[in-house]
Length: 87
Image 1: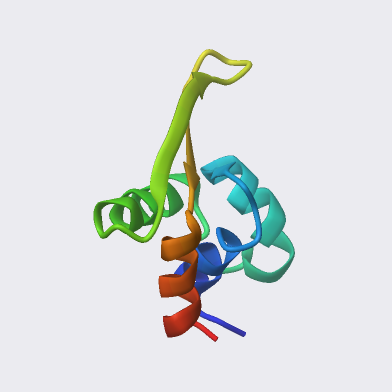
Image 2 (image 1 turned 120 degrees about the horizontal axis):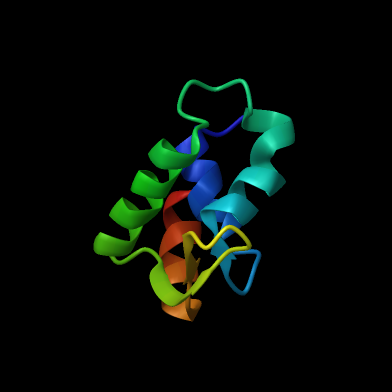
């Protein structure tokens, strides 16, 4: 199995956009037991990936509780980069 951060990046090659909650929901069956599988740690990893140019912030909104929700996406070039490093 891939490291969690790799799985998170690879996930963005399969969806149009996603928030940290979407990523957690879709990866929970394989990664929920990992120490880093916590919302704040995963959000930090997504922000780092965004700062490194691997994904882009696509939009923001508020969830049902009024909390800020950030969505990310990967364009074709970013997907190619991710796929070239993570097989």
